[in-house]
Image (cartoon, rainbow, N blue to C red; front, side, top):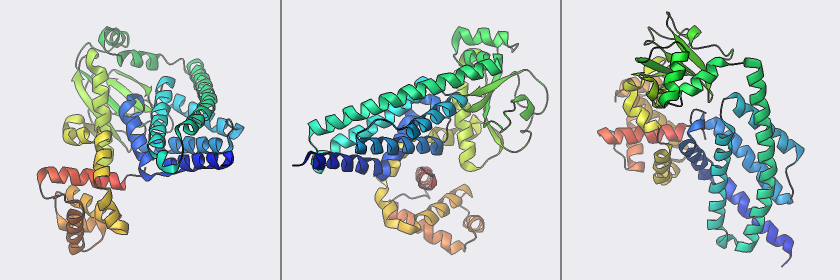
Length: 373
């Protein structure tokens, strides 16, 4: 057999793996679960960069070459973006590794059926590793240069203090004291940064000691007292507390979960995690969302083009506290249309949204179906 034909089989295998519908979503879910530092980023952000890297790697394997200047330019942009978002370079590299592992694990599973032997697959992996090494070097270089430039320009004492606070333990207690905050009764607030990079202080009414900075792509604030009211301007924030300095790292995780729950349900203003505890717990488990999606793949296929309107009806009905008339008004359809779509959902999935836990699964599944990426 012509060696060129052998290599074509390898390229076809990689293209099939990368093109699988569930690979990207499962990779993104894995990254968000296994790399907490990027969990604050949107799924669309992670999916977009992952998709671009996979496409570039596939082109490089097909041509049996290293990265081109255009590919390295994209990688450099990724490094700059993640540095500006406050994501550590170690977390960026771990996220890339998680995606790589998913690709090659799937490739090994599918190789025998594609007529690709272990030796040929190993050759492809070695070529990929050479490509990836050059990509990682450029990624690290761009990230470090951006962080160094940020440090020189900003001289950001608040950011340095806040990172120490979020380490927990005695380091947090010392940083809290250095920032002039009390030793107890602290509140942790997170929100999406403004385009102008404003602080937490200018987004909240009233007075009070506040330590804030952008950390891992979110504007994080430690407050000496509970926020007295809503946010200045549009938007939403997640809130946790009160707590002591040693527990602020855990409080940030809870506040991020509250923000995600508020975004999922369209709530605005300041949302304490206790107000959305169940929903925050659900949305924090991207791995379980992936399992739920996989379980109901056949139902999604059976619904076909009707999947989106059915999912919208189920979600609107549940978010309207099972009020058919209100859900119909939200969707601009007849109430009977909502009832019919609820029945179609139950028949396709076997999930009864009229029961307590069935409602949770139905809402979660429909939200996942409607979420891009």
